[in-house]
Length: 423
Image (cartoon, rainbow, N blue to C red; front, side, top):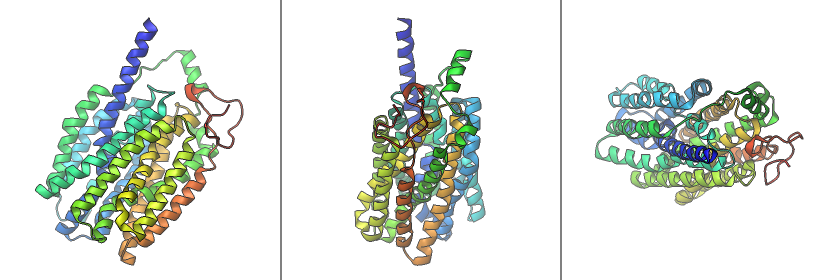
């Protein structure tokens, strides 16, 4: 009876943590500073006379700063726990966004403010929430991660609409203030009440079990799978984020109105939301790299369609939503299945940083391609090739080292099977 009671309490805590993480991610920097930045580009470009490349460089700066902040986040979360780091970061992130209301016509100030955002929001990148979620789930880990990550899809759906409405009714400065208010009034109380950490079992027996069911950070970095994941997520960053951040300007160039282009961005967010949950459910049953390969090929098709038939933008947005929606579900899941939980934060932080190394290069590269060639077509074709290469690299990932429950097979990793867990 006591065991049943504890199991029920753990289930409720896990569900609440997943919900709180979803809300936190919906109004977090992954959405506001990266995925939903696109609607800000035209009005800022118009007010200050800066070029599209100059304005878009803000997201590149964010990406590069994430490279520095992400490993630090992993260390902080491993040491202090995700809840404390997340709750401290939420008001700081809101303060950073509110500062844009006072943005002067000075490009350097604009860049400095964006450079600070990843550090002010250091606990709010996906790792902070996902590590809290992984403590409560195992056999349904993929679904739980997908539901939590769905917050990015929710945010990518509603934040562009909120931003567009505020810009249309007032201006882009008020839009930043409105987003800052949402973060303080919605995210912080929800996360405070819902996100919980599972109490650590410090008994020698439990510690021995964790050690047996995990690799250290040093051991993980010597695994071939670690190098494959680094390369694959670098390529995903190079393409996916750059495509999303340029989505509205791309459609404006193709003759779409600001309102219609913003609507397409919301369709992307809805697809991302669907992908978070659906992919999370699927990877509990199908070998996760196969799922990631499929959505990478879909992303390549979207790039070609955007270049040849921009009128298919809604289909392209859906394919890109599936691509970006799958990425971090799969990453969070694979780290647990390949390396266990002992060094989860540090491993995730390093691979996440590599994703944003690629993202920083890709965002500038796609914007520069448009400026050099007069359109986005060349950059889109290159992105399609990179995504095909990414799918190819993912095919070399071995079967999982650890199954559900932390069980470890006696044989070395081998070629993948659909089930994804070695017998």
